[in-house]
Length: 208
Image 1 (cartoon, one colour):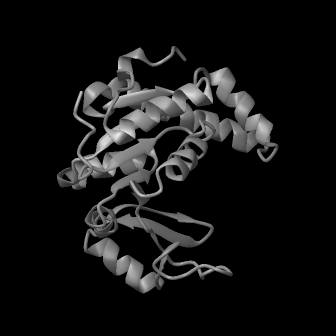
Image 2 (tube, rainbow, N blue to C red):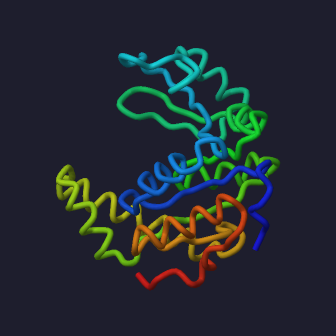
């Protein structure tokens, strides 16, 4: 297992939608406001009321965004509802320069891109896993926002991410946090982020 103690190493947190990543990370930032930082992403969408350029997002034009894509500046980028979103290498480095550990909440495709195109970032990869597929389904249904089609799509994507994390073993995932009980999962993630603990190995993921 690689050391998680160096704050110069970004912490990449990924896992299926519905595993509770946002809940865990929100608590982590609330408990340690001066230790961690999210990278500020670029987007082509217009600012919403109260949003400030350079704080919530770097707001940019589509032409400027695509120019950055051509330059290979992005760790990962995607399009949602006609708008482009992406995280640059510089945004991650900016967090480290402020003396904080950068935490990236991205999907498995973003993980692949980092490994293939930006290995010099040398991050620590943490996979947040549901305890079971049934538990994940219950969480998604409980949101009350998913159609059957969307639910099935999310579950299919979840299986793909779990398969990727499991079969990649150490080459893909450094640590796994199974979010069965929020308090226990948070304690593990907090220790990993602070560099004083470890999760489980990817071959110890629950059976699916």
